[in-house]
Length: 327
Image (cartoon, rainbow, N blue to C red; front, side, top):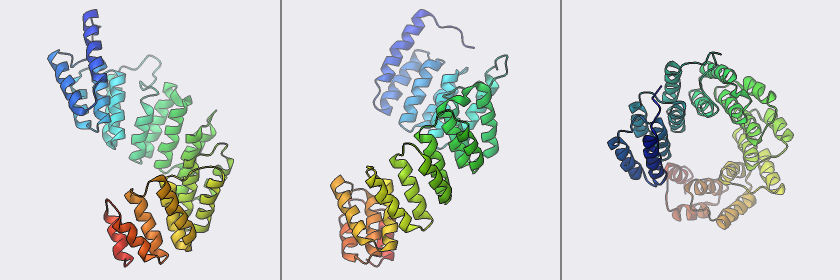
């Protein structure tokens, strides 16, 4: 446990924190960090936590790790910041390793409860899901229960997401069924999981039971039907979502266009093109790729070529569509 800071030292920390909060670029962060080193404040978990958050925001986990490792006795907030940084940058094993280190260096309270909190577990569970590590996820779930965080909605949603990513939808449903209040994230997590696995009947039951649907809910159903080859159902969902007042987003547009191509629904495909044009999204490569493929499969080679020629940026999919569609 680090010694309590003097009033003067706390004032110095607050002054440095004000500078950190004013950082706009990573170079700004480095300059203030150098100032922290000169002031011999490297052991401040308070400042290190903010630096780690800023490094994470700029995608600089390597520097965040160096800052974290310099602190001999990191507090819970600093551990949480480092777990979050690793999890959000897909360094899932490192996120778990930080948690294990935290458990080893942080004394447990007399009641034996785990030392994490409601800010620890969402990102730790994200790491478990990213690793598809079911057994590890179950252990973390036990820690969540002992910490008293199992009634927190964000933690509950994170548990569900972890279980779906780890392939155990039964346990995800168990968490869902035990929730006192379910938000749209809770419903969308399960609907998306079933749709991702092609279990459209189960996804449909949940979808129809959902009290307040969102674009994510509709898009999950749309993508699921397209993935399993039920193109008529995909188009029907796309039309229904608009009837219900939901504007299609990029994901739903890209999901429905293959269904249009397979069904030869050129009229709908052209409506989607006009819609994208009105929204000003035709400059997005993934949108153009999907429209090109739809036009090519519907036999409208000229329209597909016109899209290709007008693309500001082309990726591998763009060129592949041209090559294999004989445009």
